[in-house]
Amino acid sequence: MSKVIAIFGAGKGLGASVARRFAREGFRVALIARGKERLDALVEELKAEGIDAAGFTADLSKPEQAGATVQAIRDHFGRIDVVEYGPISGEQAFAPAAKLDAATLRKDSPLLLLTPVEVAQAVLPEWNERGDGAFLMTTGATAGSPRPFASGVGPHMAAARNWLFSLNGELADAGIYAGTLSIAAFIARSEMGELAARSLAKTGSGTGPLVDPDALADQYWDMYTKRDRVEQLFPEYDAA
Image 1 (cartoon, rainbow, N blue to C red):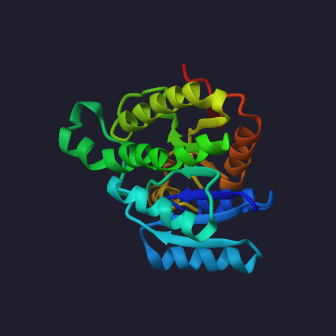
Image 2: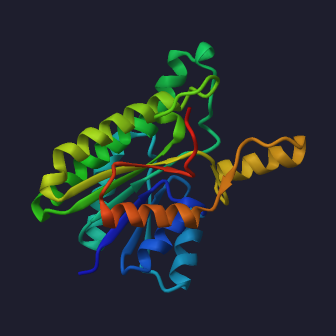
């Protein structure tokens, strides 16, 4: 039975690129997102390319849905071998640390920290039994290199990064890998990337570099196959 990657927060940017990259290696693809219409369109696009894909609607800001979503994927495909978790949209944003309040942290904590933990809990029994599995999570560069005026989502991603490092250290000997792709740019074709492009067109000032999601998907495949580092910064830069 061919392997399955479950892409949480799938969209036409990174999610679509990861789906295509892993499908080239024989993976079947489960796509998880909140918006059914856009999700269905992406599934049909991938199917037209010959990819065995299926969509599963879920609100990833509700951790209590994680277990049922994982089970629905298993019911359809029979297994899950890799999770890629990377939902983020224009609803999340950077904020100055001096203006950050508890309400903002509370709002984004489920999506960026609590739900991935619950997804991992749902897949780990299967992976422990099989002696193989991989949890890949997309974070921003500020998770490991905090910067002034770039807080907000950073504290949650920093906590997730801490958890991933611990998770990998605990489970590597059992054949289970955990890693984070830490992105120091906006992702082309994504919702956030489109917002950045519109801002550039409107104001004439840049909001940061854009990276090709296909290049990010290649990074994820390299991390998954080599399993030689917990974190990959892309594009690499001098954090000092």
